Length: 451
Ligand code: GLN
Image (tube, rainbow, N blue to C red):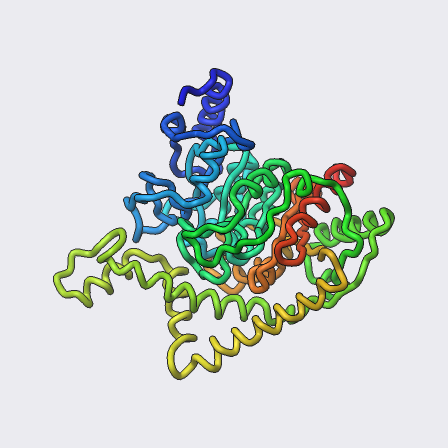
């Protein structure tokens, strides 16, 4: 396909910005290959996309920012990539992330840490930190990330952009490298809400290649793009609000009072099982990860050690191929699945997950949307938490529930702190009700309350 001269100029300017970027967000570009893609003509025409390095693009490297896949080239494209290209989108490169999407700061990467474009001493969040930082720096219109426990919403909050996690099963996972399969979703980031909605419209839907994708009624673009506030919004109480960064709390309360003035019914809620969501999430995702990552044995994928003894080959390949955080999760996941501990940990966590899901189903009977902070704190310093896994895990306290339950959620950029750091708040809605989220966010944007 011949690209128009204005499109060539756009791509040249984005390429130039990537070359001059200091955030370490983009690890590979493919600007020169774009014209060889069979680009269709659709609602994503002329929109550029950067893709997290755990989503497959045919004939491109796919490393998940891990040594074990260094040099691996994908023989096929993810369904989302095919749909984007068919609808006119341009895939311009790939982004840095935490190894196998395990982390909350994008520091655990063989390519080095992603830096926050608003302050280079701070993290961009994770694990899709490269995708968030790149959009914040205008290196592309839109980016894709993966959200297993908050990895799209938390970095979007840290970088000051929109970050959307769909209902589980809404967007095909075919071609997304598995982390924890019953939690994994592909998410969308952009500075423009319209671009998120259009991309969602294009990439959502049942995919025969992903048996967990769901055949659910698709709303029209017109309905998704409406502006309307929900009738009832659930808000959290002081006990939780008092434990978070005070500037995020202030922004939260400001939005709540604004909604009240606009006639929205505000309902104070207790977040069901709030204390238990982090342990439940980590027990279950580590168990799933330990099983998913067993495929990297040096035989079928990626790098292989040179040992002649088969057992030694497995041990050496995996010892050299994975870094500490991934090993920690494989070992903990294997432990909670082992015969003596299965009932005490894995099976118990499954039961708690079911209870959480039941409580949220109940909650959504009387509230259309829930408003939460996206993060308990503002972006933290690089190296501040990378050696303290427990501290890192608590960065996800407000995001993991949507992955445990499966419902959709959206980070909304809500202005800046006194030190000019982005603040994000999160709206969530009932499963398969993305329309409510988008209409709500559109309405807030129209009111310009954070400008
Ligand atoms: N930070 C969370 C974790 O490390 C979420 C990861 C994700 O959503 N990919 O598990």
